[in-house]
Image 1: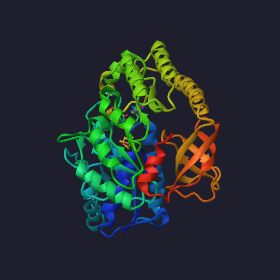
Image 2 (image 1 turned 90 degrees about the vertical axis):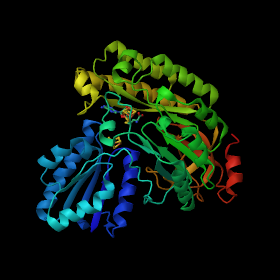
Image 3 (image 1 turned 30 degrees about the vertical axis):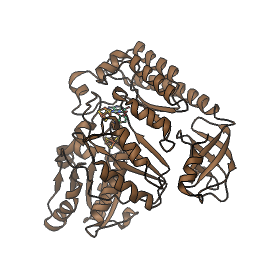
Image 4 (image 1 turned 60 degrees about the vertical axis):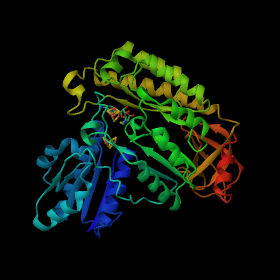
Length: 452
Ligand code: SAH
Ligand code: SF4
Ligand code: F3S
């Protein structure tokens, strides 16, 4: 069959779509980029906030119209929203033929066969305690960065969050198997690996912890940068900070979700750290890795959040001076502890007002943090043509800051040295100081890369 697959949500879903491609291609299915040519339309969905659901319902409406013209089109909803809404999707969306959660992808070929062969609906939402898809080689689009899921699920049950219900119990993949995947990736030409997990700090396989895994991955020849997302502030290992400070391939950027700066809100969120513990951790991170960049996630208007609570969040944001942040209005999710225990009592307009204030503050801080870079020279990994001007390149510094520059001879995957000469809120601009040194042997280039 000709399959059109569209992915929504986080990098974990992007990775899962690569697994889905691999699973379905092994059964002789092919993928098309244009829905007009598809016999099966699969949506790999997200459930994190209500607007994620809305996007999918909008897409399903479009597919409903299309199915009137193209009666045989098979429609499947996969991923977190499929797992979260299961019955609702199965019963209330007659155009949906397949519903499969994040642990059911190996059964997709059977589900498709059941729809095609017997005209049955194909539903599977069983969550597994063991499935890590470690026997599937994801089919990636060629590029510079490869995502690798090192674990699946989450056991943290932050009270606002739906992920433990959509992705099930936490399980880690065997390091040997992850390292084998990194070798394959390096051979395919990827230069950077980003390790993914809902809480990478709790990665554990036999005696190996996350810091051990980072070192193992960084040791793979051909891989020049290793990143990860996300750690949880409650258990950030000091061993990992020391490894990041010492190993030039481990990038000096930490995404450290704050969520709120108020102790009472953090407590209701079930985050298990206080404002002071978070700030102490930030101080320690900056002592061990002075050049580190810090980014974060913040939620505005969680249940019971008062003006004073919100002021505390602003205070932490001011004190830490994050390089950038993802900021959200609280969105109540089905099944979560917050839905059962607390009232979603912050009015929508208050949530919006707080979010706007937070965004304004963070924009100012991001601009300041970027302005400090002007005049410095950075090693930049070239990623892709700039969206605004395809004659220029977009690359990233070790600290994950985007840099736009012009270089006639550069290619994605090259390292170049760029002198920063202008700073915006989201990106830096610079001029080439030293063109690509991709032709140097990998080890020499890696040593070069840590000199600044
Ligand atoms: N596992 C990651 C988070 C994944 S979800 C971690 O703990 O860092 C990404 C972000 O979405 C969260 O950090 C949180 O800020 C936001 N988020 C999660 N649930 C939300 C909700 N119900 N409403 C608004 N934002 C939410
Ligand atoms: Fe959700 Fe918390 Fe798990 Fe992150 S750590 S996925 S916010 S429950
Ligand atoms: Fe990711 Fe959305 Fe699921 S953020 S884990 S795809 S709910």
